[in-house]
Amino acid sequence: SYELTQPPSVSVSPGQTATITCSGSNLGDKYASWYQQKPGQSPVLVFYQDDKRPSGIPERFSGSNSGTTATLTISGTQAVDEADYYCQAWESTTAGVFGTGTSVTVL
Amino acid sequence: QLQLQESGPGQVKSSEALSLTCTISGGSITTYGFYWGWIRQPPGKGLEWIGSFYFGRNVFYNPSLKSRVTVSLDTPKNQFSLRLNSVTPADTAVYYCARALSTDYGDNPDAFDIWGQGTLVTVSS
Picture 1 (cartoon, rainbow over the protein chains, first blue to last red):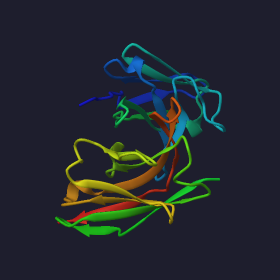
Picture 2 (picture 1 turned 45 degrees about the horizontal axis):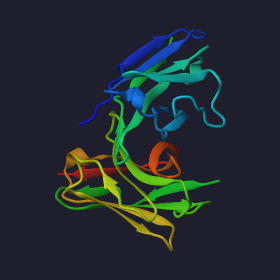
Picture 3 (picture 1 turned 180 degrees about the vertical axis):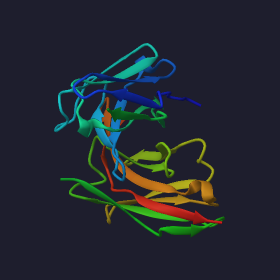
Picture 4 (picture 1 turned 90 degrees about the vertical axis):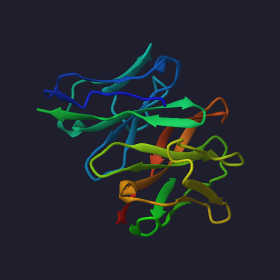
């Protein structure tokens, strides 16, 4: 089965850049989506189709996807960005997969 | 503004069936260009996709759950439902319903852009 692997945790200082990776076979050939989830809340879509940001999501969130790795970048990270982040893709048009998740800590 | 709301029992006994309903408000399950689906999250763990569908087409499921899961639609009520048979404590999770965008004029599912608040289902042994 298709798997998406993320680092368990990422730490970043306020104002610095956080980079979260998501690795999967030929992931660059698919669209990758990214979700932010804070404790006790539903996931929120923060980036999708490799280069789209939903309305209301700050511009400090950006993404890229090439080869086997998709990347979510948070520039000028703020304390409010502390959360779990999940990548997601469709292995085929009928098989959805979520990444293993990354906990982002803003120190 | 479209909203999704999950409903159903919060507790189920092992070997029985889990049944949940997702009610859509502020939009229609028949709207062109959107997929709908179920996702779950065991306590303290990651997200797992369960199944999705596009109105008028077949439902497709996570292969690891396919033998036990059924997703059905109630178009007049603007609802869709999840049934998971033969549950065990490993099925204890927060269950979310969600809407997904699509690409290629509805041919391919894409990101889940709207989520329900989720409902915790505990399976007791």
